[in-house]
Amino acid sequence: MGKNKEKSSDIESGNVYTSPPFKFIVEGKAFYIHAALVSHHSRPLDRMMNGDMSEAQKGYATLEEVDEGIFSRFAEWVNKGYYTSAEVINRSLDESTSEKAIVENPQSEKRVESPAWNPQPDEVLAIEDDHAPVGLGWAMEEPPSFGVATSSHSSKLKRHKKSAHPSAKDSSRIQLKESFIHRKALVRKESISVPPPLPNQSPEGNYTDVFLSHAQLYVFAEKYDIRTLKILALENLQASLAIFTLYEERTGDIIALLRYVYANTSEPIDGVEDLRTLLTHYMGYEMDTLMKDGEFRNLMLADGGALLGDFMRIVMKRISMNQE
Image 1 (cartoon, helix red, strand yellow):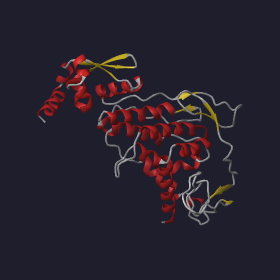
Image 2: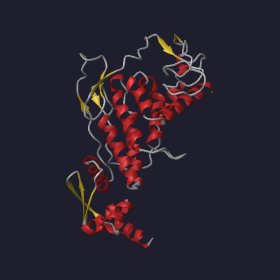
Image 3: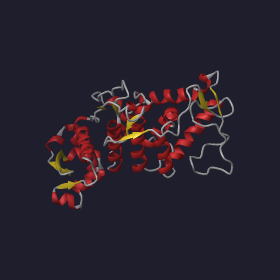
Image 4: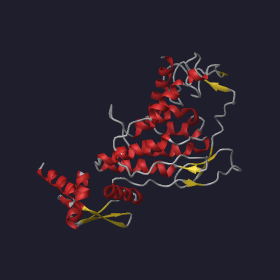
């Protein structure tokens, strides 16, 4: 307890900047950060620098599984109280390959949309009653299985014309979107220097790296128990998604984010906001567009159940909201 109080006192008095720098080696690059600053924010890193670990004896630490860009943002945040996200990549869509060619991942590999989902403009798949969420992509007496058995009865699909009252069916989507956009920030609002996210104006803007820069920093902060940074990264991702227009050509940006998050995070604790709960909320109001992408459906099956389970829960929530 006394040691923690001493560190807090150093931060408040400004003595932190007289503390010796500690060297971190990330992807072969050396970063020098005041030891007291790092110790103040992270107990695992504090033990690494000041405990009985070999890093403390050597005077430097090599972080093998950390990306240079992630650690650069951590260093920026430690010194400034905010960090700068990755930049949007603007490139023309290759319309000669497909009417919908998108960038699937940060390496800019092109993917053509699966032709399996191609609804007519004046039609929509919906549940047989009048409470179907708009654009769910199925009509059902039970939730869709996506190739995974969910009950002894198969889902019953029916195609019919759009309801004469689309606003009623859209109510759950609107409610989920409004609640997502107006989420209260705890850390971001106090960081007055946090650069505001910029909305995309066309499908050419690739936001994959932007989203991943927040998610990767969140995972880093979780690993090293940096609570304030973890919350800030989550809030920055939410702010970026809130102003992001999900063009059909840009579903790959979200798919890359979902793939990373579900591969690098664990099941959320009940009542605790995390990356998965945030993205489940986002899927809740953007499922109409996401379900048109065959890669999104394939990802749910390949994920092994966690993503599919979260998606099904938000589907059922939309159904419940529309029945209220």
